[in-house]
Image (cartoon, rainbow, N blue to C red; front, side, top):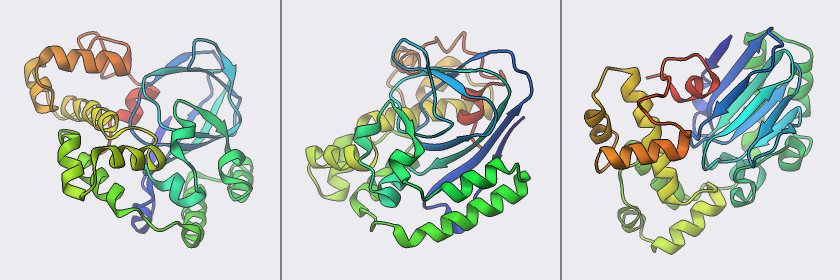
Length: 268
């Protein structure tokens, strides 16, 4: 069971969504994770998972924070899956916990390394196997209580992020810098701290997500898909897709039920 739940509307400036995965099949299965631009808090209340980012498998913490990722990696269950996840808006970890996002790129770390003991109450509710509805209410209540801890927003970064998202990743860095009135180098420094990725790479990940939106909502040709997702040509589109997913778009299983597609097939 894969399920996405929207947080309270008043929390959408911090949170993208909550998500839940439950699977009673203990058979180990390797799953690919593809960049989508959102850091995450993940709580396992089933069996542990193993992760392979750098060419070798290692066990994940049960309760973890996942930073931005620059390319695909793989996960493998070791038994039954019971997972609660919180997708955060790109700047939320910095504003909530003071996290320098450049230090957690392509990384998963124990949740307490980022948040201290501030999520211990949520972890206990998860361990108590509350219903999905009860967990959603508890999560909303928790995040409302965290608003008082927020650092002030950096309007330069927020405006640039919104421009990237609203343009589906097609704005050039020079245009973004001009729009917010800073140099390209300064914008890159701000993105390193608040997002963890350069504006250019974040925009490329947004373009990748646009591909999945277009496939989900129609049956475009490859040339239409390349053009409508903001790529210069079909060759550029294929290279970008291969870099982030490790596969050619013509062989990728867009309709398969897996974790990567669950995250990338976003509600419209």
